[in-house]
Image 1 (spheres, rainbow, N blue to C red):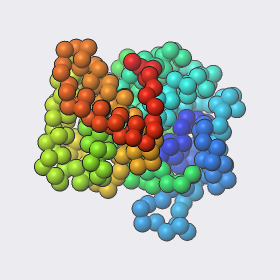
Image 2 (cartoon, one colour):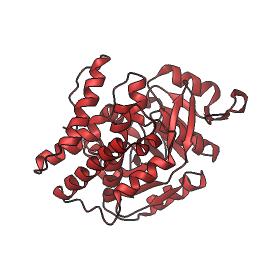
Image 3 (cartoon, rainbow, N blue to C red):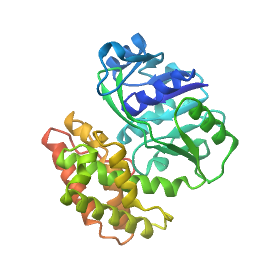
Length: 318
């Protein structure tokens, strides 16, 4: 398959490397010209935390700063930051069709509503992944752990194209499960990761250390409880999933991983708190839930952003 990955950050690079290793034709759309040059020069380099430079494995891929340079593909994978989603969709909208759907793997909620302003909803596949990665240098990525990826059609059907995409990803060592209840599962993931990301970013600790401190565990639990209350108020059925145990398992699995939000703060970048704690708070407020803990975390992260010069921007989804 000819696969276009929009966004060559940590997750995009890891997906691209695995797809290329599996024999797929991978092309990135990325605005950072230094990253584009590095990928075009050597491909995507994958390393571990203790890997020597000479042991870095490189996987062939192409990259461009403009989606208009690409005229055809079989699949798009959206891995940009949530606040760049609308502009990214405009850049590659000409590639999206019934025969070339786009998988949204962004952190948070509200993305489908943004994307369908540009392309038809039937050509959008919703998904999320538990894979963890850290960007390292312009074309390198540290593989922090392979977790399962879940994808699903918005209408809940296990369509032929969904099954075909799942087979392709699995053949490339991206463990993928097509599911009929992707919206419910996405909410579960967002509630858990809104807790982990925001707390890790504020206390500046790796994921695993969050569950070793009584105070941070208590804070994580309050965020989970509020998230469940918000989902219920929004009419989202979360099923029998124990979100507290899901959180603990995620922190254990990615013990030494820096959460994406913590990586952003360390590198003095804009975070995705708007699409995590921010949107959960807003959904709660609209439906009568006083999500004060999510609001507090949102305000803390925004304060940190402003301390290094991030200007307030109106988010498209709000």
